[in-house]
Length: 472
Figure 1 (cartoon, rainbow, N blue to C red):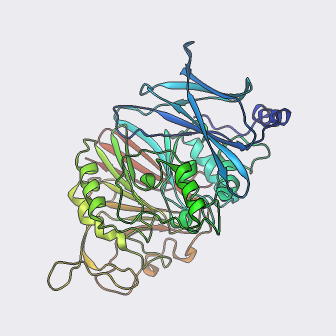
Figure 2 (figure 1 turned 135 degrees about the horizontal axis):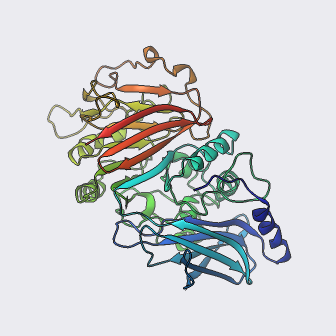
Figure 3 (figure 1 turned 135 degrees about the vertical axis):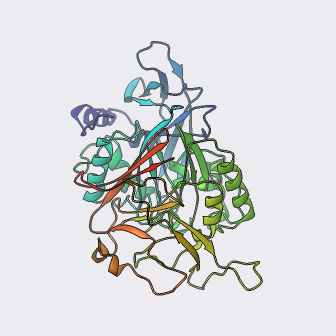
């Protein structure tokens, strides 16, 4: 992808809508759709308008060829603070490793004409990861620009996508203006969502308000995302509260995505990604979830196995230290050969040494011990010889916190000061953190190339502030 600012063409496209009766609130953007394995490929185009009916058409074709396919366009009517129409167009039966052009027209006039590349089956990936980013800040804009510079094939988020509460209005204010070609964009904001799929993972701010009566636009993640539907129906999904009328409308307008896309997985190139909902209503040891994780990762033949969720189990910051429930899944991940775990929640960057962890059990050995605060003690094994440069084959899983994508930074005083990272309880904390950089915003760039994985942490000036290599 070539980095580009918002030009006059995009501005004129938006302004031309003034000639129509219809207002476009969210311009067309790309989503992965229900495509998890590398047996089928599709994409979904989503956009949002006011309540005025519009005659939309979506066509797509192989770039450079004349044969055109027509996408089926559907919409739902969202009656929230205002009534809007949320459109979806399915681009089905796509070829892998192929560039497609798609065109969205309203009453015969183009409102989007751009291209994207489908997922690859080759043993290579290049993707960006960021978390805690949708805060509407200048740092978010700078990170957007730096991500686009790196030409990622796709982007994964580690949650807290739209501050403060994951509302429809939060997405429209703090997400889309930064990644779509809007008029008068924030400085350095860069259009990416119309041509690069974002795989978003749920964070606590995405489900912070659970009452549709209190906030009709709550849980907008399930309106604006279109992700693989291969996750389990867990025992404790997100709870939607409100009047029966509002809840019924929400379920209708988010079907089949709610609550299915809370947990999902997908393949890209030679990597398999398992994305989990780690919010406090979730139970990491839910038998349905654990069974699905075992099958999902265990059946994968990918060279690289990566897990993504929001709340980290291993964190040496002061902020959010006590919430460690996801440590309970460490033995499962280790058994399944997971290489890397990507998290957010803590607004800084942290990289662990390769580690294994066995959670402590009660005296009878039939139950894990969890403190009232959510701490999980246990036994650590640390690979302190791995340095990511001369020693590149880790013994254990490397855990990453990448939560410095745009929100206010946490614990800036801790940056590069290992003597300040210590926590008090033996069996709960050991020196498992190798890097902690909390004085600047940053994102993660990962590249897999056959049996080599390279991870770089890049700050908002474009500087690489950490880098490691993992080999097999």
